[in-house]
Length: 225
Ligand code: SF4
Image (tube, rainbow, N blue to C red; front, side):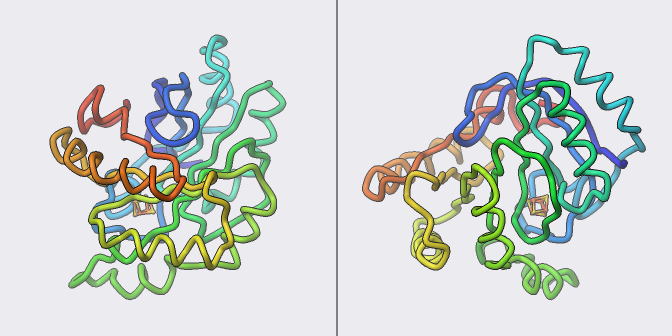
């Protein structure tokens, strides 16, 4: 299977914030978010072939790290994902899958981290606009993932005006507030700091969880962290 990178770090977002984790990043995505922070998995996908055995060997090199995060790109596009999750589970690890919730397949997963993409993700003025917009909102897929797994709904917020759209999504999906995580969009600490102030207030008012982007704050906008 084609991966863009693997690395050991801490989970920088969401309910498992701060938990030491092994990241397996697949390459390839069916969306083209304008602010995508991993364009090497979407706009210009790159990577190398890894066998399942090689991935498991790499995971087993970190006996002290129980959590494995399969991210992308869009990992649900990976044909071998189901088999990989079964093998990682059999090795006794906790699995988080980070997905935009637009495609699905049968997997084993302890936390389905679903990040529905808002209209702020649209690559306006590019040739990919049509593909992105026709694919980014799949409520039937989101509902199945929410029914089938322990989950969080994680939203990337750019402007205060995104909040109304998020509330509409949450209403439509009938998601309880405690499953909702909001985090600021941004790859620079000063942008994240400014957006975090009003976003944390919005979370307090609505009962949502606020998440920083801890990896960006700790390590900056770099790959493999
Ligand atoms: S879904 Fe994720 S990987 Fe794909 S383009 Fe959007 S941000 Fe990038």
